[in-house]
Length: 394
Image 1: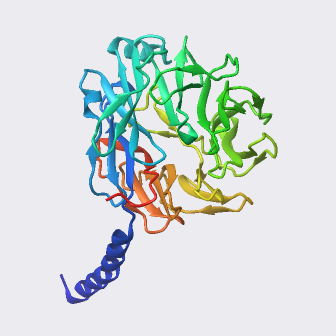
Image 2: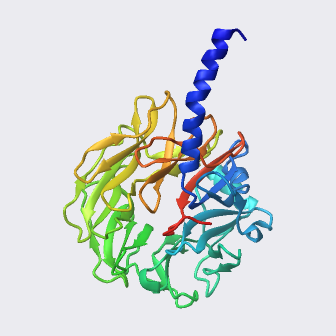
Image 3: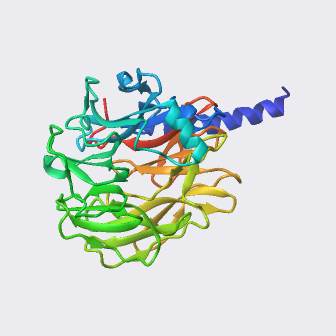
């Protein structure tokens, strides 16, 4: 190496390394739950899915471990990270099993058949001990149970079982008993079910229309958007608003509406982004994952992803409607699944900027991004979720 080149390299290192170390040292150590698994197997999504495992790591990239391994001991069984308890002491883990015969039928017919050949349950795992409790196996109402969340004030749980092939919003007590339908006599396919922070209301979409009701299913009202596709309603942390995507399927955009169903307005445009992220290197009939907006903890902003040029970039918009582009990538780069830290200072997202689908943590404005995961080139990391703790994990 000649002297001018050596001096230039030394200068670059002198500039870059302190900035890297500073960013590394200042990163939060909150725990992050996520799912990782293979995405390179050409035999279809089932072959890749069975490699999925629920994992945990710190936001600084250390301490990675696989969770609830007893849920993946049976052949054709896998797990996914699906959420946290409000105090951050328990993780929601989905246990999934499908018969290879049913998977082959689904691939041949290019549609899911969830009335047979599946066993899916929502479980709670104590983070400190690793102890697992399968809540949806108690007084079982379905072979396919997902969407578990905590009702406010310790009132129990909400979840969405498939009943005769139709997804329904249900509640149950804290011990897993007294499972009951709160769909308000609805007969449509319900999804995206959650409770307001006050615990007085629930929301979900039924046949791709948004509904709000009391927690017991009474007082059900429809949010009239005039659009055929409305998906994944999410409550603002202050309980005053819902956000969801609305429009045509694969051409839908972030909207907001007040908690009484009034004040509907389109908040942002995704610039032609279809709103799904492809996980597999050899796509299958339904291998894409929905990519939906999320709230900041102070309810002032919504984070989402949109097409800018040839890339899918991370965006942020205030409720007043001022959008900000937070990532600036080379053409073809994809960002996905944003999630904001409990203190609002950090944003996590997935990105294939390195050529591998990893999770990253950056400051709330998208700066100082560093990887959280280090999955190999034949795998991907998806659906990162911050531990909702008041203090960083020790």
